[in-house]
Length: 391
Ligand SMILES: *Cc1c(COP(=O)(O)O)cnc(C)c1O
Image 1: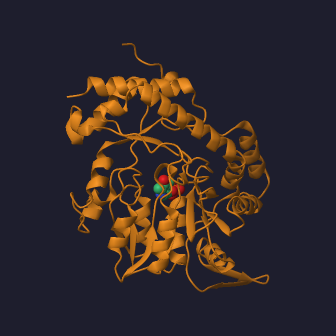
Image 2 (image 1 turned 90 degrees about the vertical axis):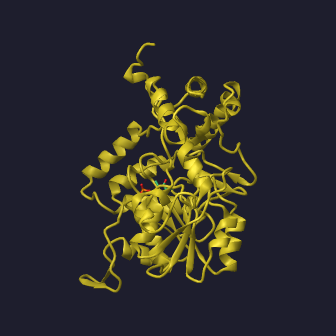
Image 3 (image 1 turned 135 degrees about the horizontal axis):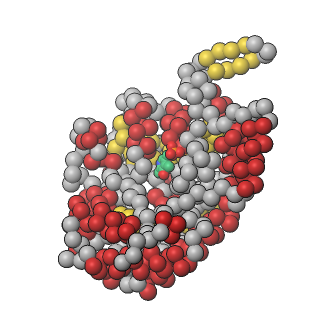
């Protein structure tokens, strides 16, 4: 086997910033106003249009966005927030940051999203909110989610970090619902390098969000300043907003390209016999009423059948893929088994679907600049690797 040249390496994600966007950044830097200003305002206006005219405010990152959403919902000490363990750890960390308690429930192994039956079973008198995550961009059953929230009078803080342009019954995620948080981190479908936005219900919530992102400061007249509720430093700069605006203009094309590549994945996965090897594919295109934006294409490896077993099989496969010039990722190990969360009482065996999928899930390369031949190579290499590493 010959070593693969570095230039042939296929990463699992690669952000694309074109020359026009770079020129826009240059203009902001030369303009004399480089932090939050007209570009941030324009980005928020454009986002509001995307989300059906609802109020939208931007923040320094998706984690800050979710923390502010929790504060707007008045969630704090003594409150419980029900969420999924298969997500970026920010989802649970922000609940702790406001002094509340994250309550993890198991996932549905088909969607890999929070199991809404388990959500309902976990509701207590202290439950204040549900925080669903749309892993790889796939929404949960939004009708059921909001029916549960209405029945038990709960807020919903949607961690839609991965779900820009995903849809439920044709409606964009964010264009309806309660508080909906998005991230524009570098790996997301559209990026501002770092950044996030929150879609809200009322102008009053938007005013509170503006205060909380800048130390709680309220200005009046030429020189008036007051603070009623202290906030943090979470504003998005015009440099980031200029990048976000340029990316947002390409949203339709990005989503369409990703859907086409996902379709190619399903075809190539069938040709390469991945399912026969025990590899679990994502739900097919347009399952039920939910449309994913294909933020990621994730498979679950049959770790029991592979050398190394549940603890080692995935790293063996990832290493073998890397040696053949293909990058892969892990999104995500289950949060409840991290040391800190174990110290709160979480243990192995409590959330079996999340634990199994957390051990076997692998993110395959998917980004708009990829070609169908790249997808073929990924599927063929994964097939060959799993055959070779089968027990
Ligand atoms: C990216 C992401 C976040 C956090 O966003 P940042 O912008 O990185 O702070 C939160 N939740 C999920 C599911 C994400 O994918």
